[in-house]
Image 1 (cartoon, rainbow, N blue to C red):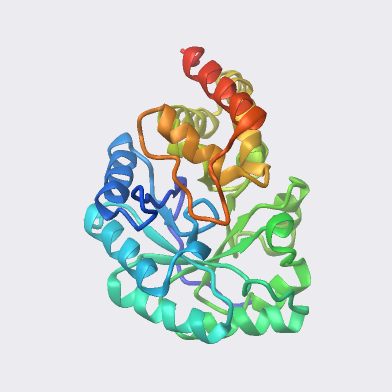
Image 2 (image 1 turned 90 degrees about the vertical axis):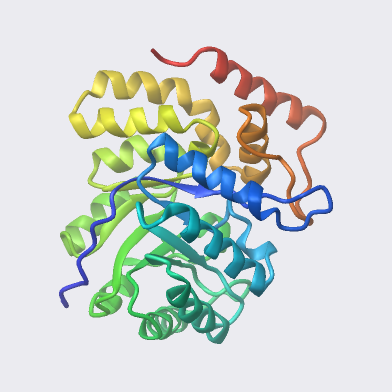
Length: 301
């Protein structure tokens, strides 16, 4: 098994939202305000243009502009990790080369969109993308959303790629954290990728959390992470139980709309999303608003 490039990533990395104006064009000043506010709250990194960042709803140039905006705002104080979500391997290669030139600190690479690959095709995609850049790479495993599981045998074959350094694990089964650590030791740095298994993931050995609801509740997210790191399980459980109704939203099909609605209610951003997504409506909207307001009004002390 090859030695990986050193990975120092740890902590709470919000999956930052992309902000749109009323015409649903990219609103870069608003996007930078969201990014800057998160940095001021003390997050440990930013992940851009993943699921929550609506990466698949952006044009090629828009993706590059969002990345430039984040690099400008961060001023090198925290890692800025660019989501790589493309229809073809060639398009992913073009983007990672541009992302490196723009100044990204790392990449979160997804399987190619739409097409469901064989294990050999999945390995080829990741190898080819990794070979196109010197940046460290976090693989994003999200079987519920993207119909592809990066299984243990595939990870074994990829373990000789030195710049594949981390895994964002978004399988609903928390046993995956232990299975990966048992198989690879510290070869890959693990991040919890589903908000409603973050307690389990961090307790079982993940070093960080790529989080959706941190966009709306950054202080409590950081408090939860700090409590787990310090071994204060009583406080961590109290925060987690308070947070859990909202954290479940991260596992639903309308997570982007729910998270952006939470941002709006908390005065941190707009709920505007690009079609085919539409803002929440009707009973679902009322239920999510009630959940957000309950959480806002009952924050743990």
